[in-house]
Image (cartoon, rainbow, N blue to C red; front, top):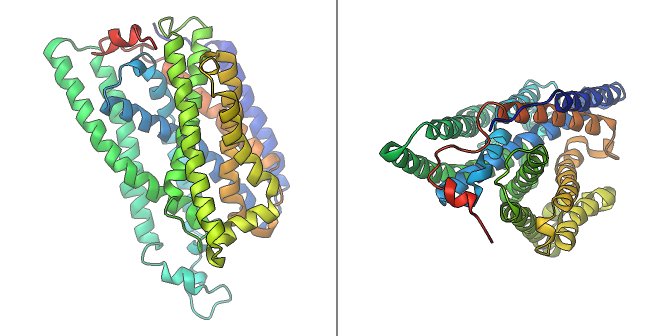
Length: 402
């Protein structure tokens, strides 16, 4: 059965987008930071946030292929819909990075040539020492030659092969399935390396003096849990409209388990990173957290409470993971919590003393990108049957029971 994108749903998505644009416009008018730094930082946060969610869905899709998991076959088209947003998210991130490279803004302070020019007022010897890695040619090679080609081609290829499987039977189906299985394993290896280095380049380098070897995994965990929440909400929405009738409580339970499990993965990585730096108390390392604790206390601890305590308390039980309303409610709260987490990663380093609180600009752009994201995902869901037709594990997925 194909999904029909109703006029009411389309109007709601468009309304969210328009409301976001209005709020963002008010925020931009009131942005008095140099080079409209706040505007560019907020644009990057929201562009990367939904790009990351799409990337998390692509990772999970490949993971399910590589592990030959059967239960998720019933909902795999939902993940395809989510990662269809990748090209849009990539375009937004590239625009912000390109503007920084051209000196239009200074979200990434190391992009300013004066920072590595001896004798200039902003010369920084630490940044100059990092130039073998943080130099423009190599940086853009990684962006346009490694990260985006791998992720965008992966999304295109997996979607193409998924649709091709619908028209295959017999030996051709088995061979094609094995091809997807092998390529998924290869993609996961590339993803493990590239997603981590991407996080260093795009987010960690905003606080250019600071570094963490756990940072890439920590950012990845946030992307992953966001994608799992989106999938849960989409499946619940589709079922409420009469689609996916064969998705049962066991499928929902498994999706709830993933939200719960990845929330704890994020907590483990965040706490490990924080604890090691905080208790070693080395000034150049601990300053990253001290600035956020001293100057942005509510944001720092608020997002940690939402992303750890809320899923721990409310999603621990079996029944909770099978309760659609509870999953949607808790998932929405955690979703916002991970957006706040990205805000606290980016804004203190990008704005320095000019960052005081999250305002209309950040919220408006969040709603804008949410509207675009919903329009893209729901439109993609209309283009193919919501349930794969001839997948080798379809029958096993239909009878999934735990």
